[in-house]
Length: 128
Image (tube, rainbow, N blue to C red; front, side, top):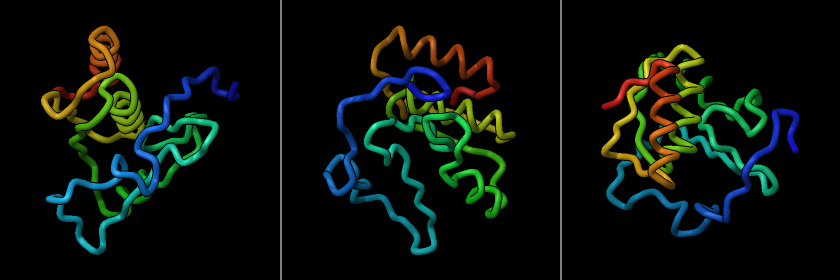
C-alpha cells in the first residue's frame, strides 16, 4: 500500500525494449523531442503521464511542457479508463486545457470507460 492508497498492479505491458514499448514506425519524432517514460518502477504502476503512483512525485512532463510554452494538450491512447483519464485529469489540475480524442482511445471495459469520461468531464476535460 502506498501513502496515497491502494493501487492496481497491472500485468506486464509496454516493457522497455519490447515491441509493445516501441513507437509506431511511421511516427516521426524530431531529434529535439523530449520523451517522458512512466511506470518505470517494478512494484508500482504509474498511470499518469505527470506523476508517479503517489500522485505528487513529478515524472517531468509538466516541466518539459511549461518550458516549451505549451498550455493546451490533445490526448489519445490506452486505456481510456486508466492512463488516459489519470493523465487528462492531472493535466487539468495543473492548469492545461485538455482535449481527449475519443476515437483515438480504448478502455479496458465499457463501464470503466463511461465512469472515466464522467470523471474527466467533471475535471474540465473536453471530448474531441
